[in-house]
Length: 125
Image 1: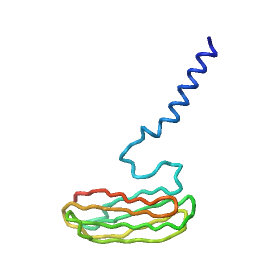
Image 2 (image 1 turned 45 degrees about the vertical axis):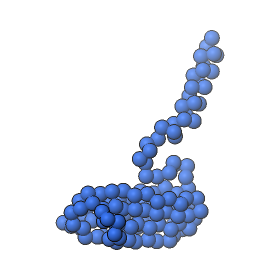
Image 3 (image 1 turned 135 degrees about the vertical axis):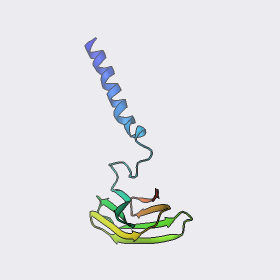
Image 4 (image 1 turned 90 degrees about the horizontal axis):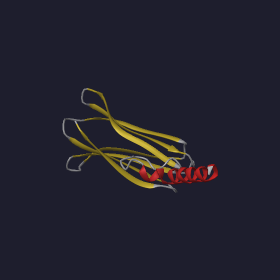
């Protein structure tokens, strides 16, 4: 009987381990941890009307990666942008911008051998 309960518990544990990535947050901004390239990005307030658009990319495979940040206004007119191409294991990208009140869209584009992804975040200032 103990062996049967142990086998059932082990089977349930295996099912949970296999299905956990399915229950991950759909709003997550990065691929699963097993991916070769992960990133975070955002728009941070510096002072007054100055904001910093920033990205940090972890390039675990040290492959050549192109990273671009583009800031749009509410009508999708480009306000500012920055980009880099690098094989470093950690890639930092940032640029200060002056913004007035309104709605803005910050878009990151990450392209490499193992990833090609574009994600957008919206900000109201």
